[in-house]
Each structure stands twice: as structure tokens, then as C-alpha cells.
Length: 289
Ligand SMILES: O=C(O)CCC(=O)C(=O)O
Ligand SMILES: [Fe+2]
Image 1 (cartoon, rainbow, N blue to C red):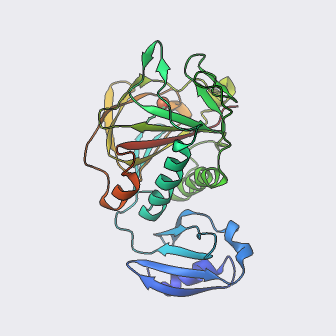
Image 2: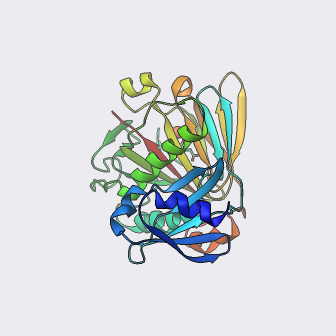
């Protein structure tokens, strides 16, 4: 995509100029910092091509526009109400997410090893916005099945990310695929390379939201994993770092799980960020009410 086209696209938000070109990125600066919140993160579709726009680091107010993504974005429909979007999250955003999520995960309200139906799960987890209590199977405001600490709020950047993903998906697909999901909780799971998650359904959100088919949006980071689904027959799909998986509508009650995490599959550029907690990270965004 020519840089002039990128600039024209960015100028719709306010006066912008290109300050640098480097390794497939254009660095765009807005003269009016007020426009920054109105520029959506994730991907823009410009003249049929995909443009990744990364939020500015607060101090620099410079936006990264990746015009030359290393991996193509591909939308795969795996059934009615089941969509796998490969490479939706750019490497720059993946790195930022890993850094932020692992930092939250190290705090006292961070990762713990939950027990489900009397057995330790093969993953560690923490929640943002609302806590999913593995004993009562309800969403709570404190970590009722762990240490009783209050649940941290969901950071704005994660709420915006979930909205941006929905916005992009609707842009990419001709018809609106899912009802809008208001992200009230984000469950962060970490799997070591021995980690797994048995087949289950996500049914603890409100009856109304299940009935409306409000989707669960999941984002994968780090090692690749074999995601299994049981619809009319057992199916599986490989989720890689930067992929999004969404189920909703008629598939809202999909049986799903993680059968295997593949060692040594973290993208090279993400290795240093994941070094303190190697394996796979998964974030699921859910509306509870
Ligand atoms: O790790 C994943 O991709 C799936 C996580 C999941 O199904 C859950 O947290 O309910
Ligand atoms: Fe699930």
C-alpha cells in the first residue's frame, strides 16, 4: 500500500505527517494529540488492503502503521457462529499485550492455579473485570475461590481491543456475524507446554446473553495450541500467536478445549517478552449480563 494512501487514511482523524519509514512500518505523528483516542487500534481496511495501526506510546504520540504485515490476515469460518481469524494481532501489539498481561499476572491478584471439580487444572489463571469462580461457577467481584482479593478492573486498552476486534470483523465480513459483546470480564489463562484444558462449555454468563448468542472472543499469544471442538463431530484447529477465535450465535454453547500446547512455537520476536513465563497465553473476553 503506498505511503500516500496510508497518510490520506490517517488524515481523516486529524492533521498527520509521516515521520519515519522503517522495516515495513510507517511512523505517523498527529499534530493534535486529542485525536489519538479516536484512532482505532488493531486493523483498518484501506482500499481492500489491511493496515495495522498501533496505539502511540503515551509520551511519543507517534503511531505505528504497519503497511507490510509479515503474515496475512485470514478469516476462516469453521461452522455457523465459529470464526478463526489468523494473524489478526500484529507483532507489535502482541509484544505490548504480553508485557502488560505478564506484569498484571505477577501482581498479588495475578496468576494462581485453580481447582475445578476437586482437581488442579493444568493451567494458571487470573481475571480482570470479574472473577470466574471455579467452585461456584459464577462471576464474582472478589477472588472467592482463591485468596479473596478484589478483582482488578479490566484495563481500558483491553476493552478497546475487544471492541476493535468486533469492529474489524464486521468490516471484513459482509453481514454482521454476531451480536455486539460488551467486554465485562477477561479471563487470562497461561499454559505451560504440558498444559491443557478439557472439553467444556462456557455457560456461566447470563441466560439472556447465552440465548442472544453474544460471542466469546479469544486471543492467543505465545506457543501454538491444538484447540478442539465438539460439534456434530470432533474437530480441531491450530491456534497460533496473534490469532483470534470467536464463537457465538448458534455456536455459543460450543464444547471446546485445549488438547495440546506445542513447545518451541513462540514467534521469535515474542520470545524475550515471554521469557519469564514461557508457554501459551490466552485471553477470553466475555459479556456476563
Ligand atoms: O485457551 C483457550 O484457547 C481456551 C480457553 C477457554 O476455553 C476458557 O478459558 O474457557
Ligand atoms: Fe472455554
